[in-house]
Image (cartoon, rainbow, N blue to C red):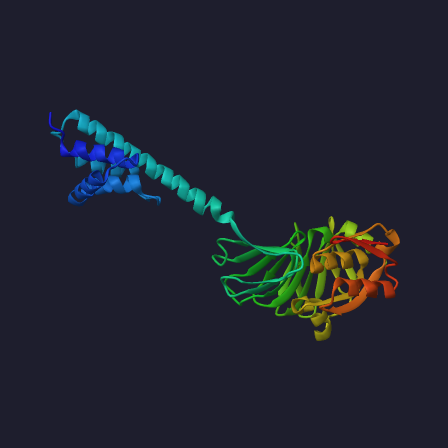
Length: 342
């Protein structure tokens, strides 16, 4: 019995799916597709890389009705086979669609600044972010859809584009900051066990992680959210007003920062390093990220002391020399990129 055109098309389709078509067979398949819209519909469903939002049963019945009922049963069965394959592909496509566009909403773009470096990032909404050394910023793929959310590890200075319809949120380990359009600095390195926020201009709302209490900040305000362990380690320092929130503490600076103070706090963007009565463990942490080094100190008395100083793009040896002159450290040794402080 002579092979029907439909049988031949199915044969070519089979070989196409197995990637075994010759050049001549490829040309014949294209000719059949051009001449028969019903072939095109089946081929499109089988070949589609995008999920087709169609009624599978309706598509199956529609294509089946176009087959000549006078054909041999074998042909009908072959069509049934391929239409069912197409239907299953559509269903798989739909599942893929939901996996990518629903569950995939949590995928993120990560921006990083290595220790000893800084990075500038401009987000899709026009917001500008400067990342300090050892920092990372995670931006959701659906950023700027209904709202604007980022997650910060480390230190970043934000100049947020104004958009009243889509608030901007910065999430850290200890806090969440809600913004409408403003400039502010956030420092939140995991090993420091605190999130410190300084508002330069505009207005933000800050809340501790896991709480609903929001604190509205005005320009010049400085608020730190820290663990109770960190708070205890800093006992005795003039920290300002303190509110306890479970295992976290909210520390409000005891003075509003003037423009000069703000400049000192955020001048890391200009390669200037400043310390304002900061505990030595925090000083060491900043130096490690600034110079891409490791500092080790087992001196408990030293770790309880504080330091104030200002450095304008100087080598680490100059900083350590200043620490010796002020009596904060006695001696230090170096092995590779590791400094041992005594």
